[in-house]
Length: 141
Image (tube, rainbow, N blue to C red; front, side):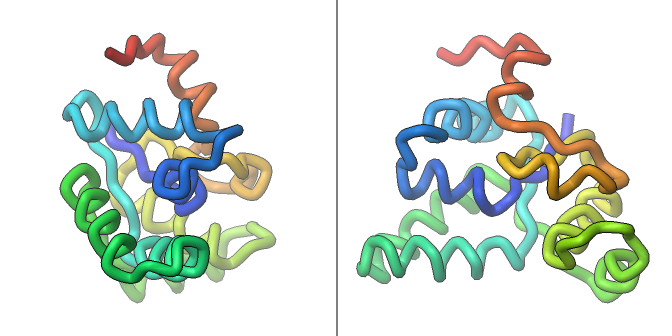
């Protein structure tokens, strides 16, 4: 099963955001173990870098984190067709519409995100990390 990781889920893991960390980490671990095919858009990487670097104030540590992310998730480009498709989607947030378009082109089964309401009009269903684990009865070791 292929899933696209939204920026906020990866930041939850990288920044160890207490309230969201465990479920996000567990889904990320599934991708690391190869139990699911995890993908992430190239645009998300730049956002992750910016947000986590601001928080940690350590460029080399953030680049090391990004390297680890790229060892677990497949980096997919945002293409011109994704931007054109995103413009047509009835979604309020353009950045989320681009993510949804990338997920659709890549034939992802789900977008893993904490902001499922932002993806209510997405052509690919959005699901929280917690609900994804619950729905698919993943047992994390």
